[in-house]
Length: 214
Image 1 (tube, rainbow, N blue to C red):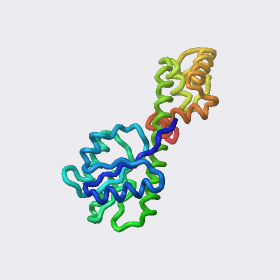
Image 2: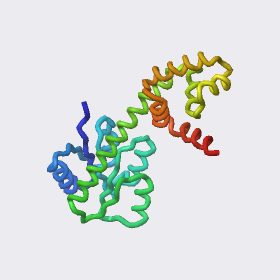
Image 3: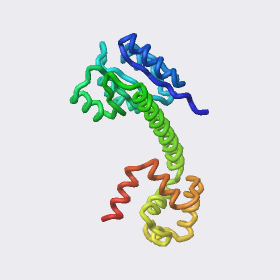
Image 4: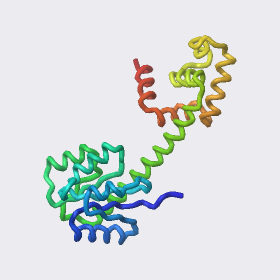
């Protein structure tokens, strides 16, 4: 069952927290509010998809520092920065660090809600992609060393006869290993097999593509 998205509101101003919480709840979003970056870090468990609505200037850890801390921890939760004290260098730093948007007060409620919806959709996509990569990688890890060799050469566009020559094995052995690769990877075609490797190991797939273009 899909988890219900959560909007995390992080702001040390009680009035702002209450206002933002009322806004997101008015359109049916679940929310959690925090009066500091540290309290958010202490509570966040990464289970539910969603996004963070974050103030820049806060006591203790600032909004931008929290953004960097999340990145360092490998937490890819989309971040929307809302501030009444923004400036261009601050906005540039936030966007370079991967913020979804940098919104200055006063803002239109619908503008923020639209960004929140985009953030949720982005996080849901990311989680689905990550889950798919995990499943595919587990299948790859279950291949034997020889099956890995055959897969790598299939990725390079070799036909069975070429693979047999490259590995010094019989054509029948290549056919057998290739069939097992397709079965273990649960791929219905070579195109689907290649797409799986691209999803799970994009850097490896990129290197092969570059080799083909040389």
